[in-house]
Every structure is written in structure tokens, then in C-alpha cells.
Amino acid sequence: GAVVSQHPSRVICKSGTSVKIECRSLDFQATTMFWYRQFPKQSLMLMATSNEGSKATYEQGVEKDKFLINHASLTLSTLTVTSAHPEDSSFYICSASTGRISGNTIYFGEGSWLTVV
Amino acid sequence: ELKVEQNPLFLSMQEGKNYTIYCNYSTTSDRLYWYRQDPGKSLESLFVLLSNGAVKQEGRLMASLDTKARLSTLHITAAVHDLSATYFCAVETSGTYKYIFGTGTRLKVLA
Image 1 (cartoon, rainbow over the protein chains, first blue to last red):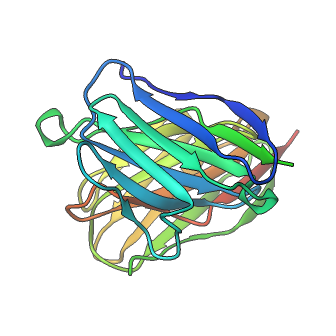
Image 2: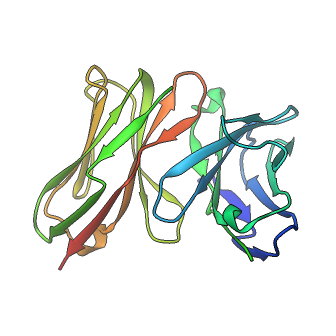
Image 3: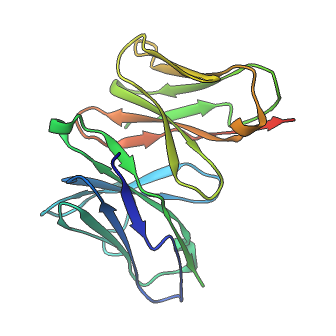
């Protein structure tokens, strides 16, 4: 079946640095991908919708200059957390849509744990 | 703005018992999903409910959807310890493919 892969699965970075998380659809083309964050013992919060070849659409309250999203190809979206702070430590999950033609099935990645120290 | 609420938030139950988790949402939607999440892991898809009256069952779990009441239920029959996890419902906002997740229900099944 379809697989969505995230990399890295775990990352530790220092405050003030930037870190990039990749989301890849391994066996289908995804024109739309989504990024979520999840704090411990909380629900998933949608951060942004990533569209191939265009700017991402951010949800209200999400800083687009801090969370840079790039969807440069039909199989790859990246989330860059810039000038990371400890409060950015979270579990980040992406999902990818197969699109209308393929029944618009959504597949979730394995998630990426970010710890900012 | 679409809001999705689940109850209960926490559920501790004995093995062999039955229980129902409720998912209410605030606006019309085409699709509703149920997921399971184990600690430290991503989401495991359980059910996709696409129409009013839809009912799906897999093992000890059964999900249903009432679009008129904007309510979905996840029923657990004869719970076993392996069902311990957090369960989320998610509602797709019409035409956007965006999922809004419920608050989650942390289930603990006691042996």
C-alpha cells in the first residue's frame, strides 16, 4: 500500500538553529500534503496545507516565517523550523493526499520528534 | 470554524467490558475517520465513514456515523488490554481535504 515517510524520525537541535523535516510519498504523487503538530498528550493541530508548486496555506495562529514549508515536487514536502526554541519541541506529523482521481485517500507519515535544547 | 469534540477524554475500563466513545462535530462534513495512536507513534487508520448511517466493524471495534446529529461513535466490545491507546476521530472539512482532529480519548484497559 501507499507509504508516506518522514525523516528524521527524531532530531535534537540547539536553540536558535533551524531544522528541516522531510515528508515523502513513496509510491504515489501527492499534490497536497498537510503538516500537523502534536504536543504530548494532546490532539493533532493542523499547521498548514502544502501544495505542490505554490505557497503553503497556513492555519490561523501559525507563524509562516517560523515554519517554512516547501513542496517542490509531487513526492516531497519539507517543513523547516527556523530559529527553534524549546517551546517548538513537539511531534510533527505529515500527511499526503492521493488526490481526487485516486479517491482522495490520506496517508500519514510516521512522525518526527523534535527536541530543542 | 469546524470544531470536533470527543468524550470521554479519559477512559479506564476492565477487560471484558463494553464502552462507547463519542465524537461530535460542529458543521457538515463529507467524511469522518477514526484513528488509533500508540504512545510515541503516528496514527493507525481504523475506519472511514462516508455517509449517514454508515457502520463499520473490525474485531472488537465498531464505528457509526449520524450526519444529521453530527455524531459518530466508536463502540468497544469485550475490551482487551491490547486496545489500550489513544483514539482520535477526525472530520474532513468539505472540499478541502483538511482534517480537524477531535480532542482524543485515552483508553486504558485494565487486565
